[in-house]
Length: 335
Image (cartoon, rainbow, N blue to C red; front, side):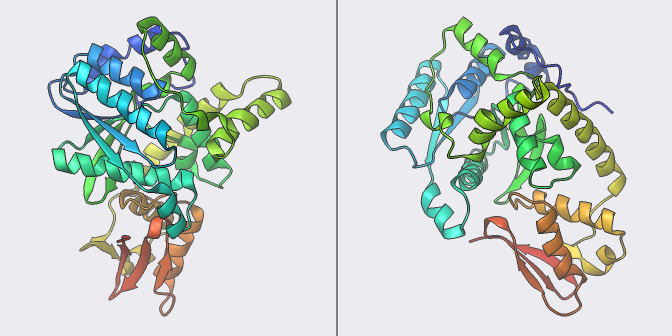
């Protein structure tokens, strides 16, 4: 089974980015409109330049201002808008209130920023009837994601980390997320940017340790390298590739969800072995847009599913709830 990447064979020179242009144009019709998530940082600005070089002419830039960095955020948006004007591309700038929503939902700023960012992108996708978005996540991002999931007690899907192509159901739309850079690392992106003379904005918060991802990047990975005497990146990516293969095989073997209306048929789910039932529930939660799903969330759903009395409701991340009523298990989305 070929998933289309071998991320542990990471190239670090600028040619690794250049080589992506032709396959992108072949895989995704460059004559059709596509969204591109652009923060103004080096990764997304390189992605933008590459797509233009590959012949994509109907690009819609989506820039999300998280409301966390004041004048710095304004400067990011200004760079994206000015670049779009110079290249003849459209741009959508959306503002979200991360701090306020994180406090209300009792989530971390990092988690809330990610969820609101995806919801903003989905909103543009729905308005523009364009459910495809290019994202600039690269191999280093995937490594950090794998470690975050590992230490949360994840299974094979979490260890697989990000995938080059995935579909996520967000606010009523199936959003196809395309990540061309998962096989190249930050060094290759920097080399390409230098060669092309690109401009970008540096987010100073990336150098601080306020976010878990930053602590993994600046502290955990160097410590692992010091302990083992070698860089762990290729090994982590190899493990992620193998987990992705296992997960793809398991998904093929599982079969369809026992749907009933907008929910799942309780009686049928109860007949499945625990391993199959847990995988199906996890897949259902993720396709429904419930963030940060894992063992704990599946356990909560199972407690509602398997009980004949109470509990018939449980809380899920992101303000979602799981309910059982009249033999149907269903998810209530946040307002």
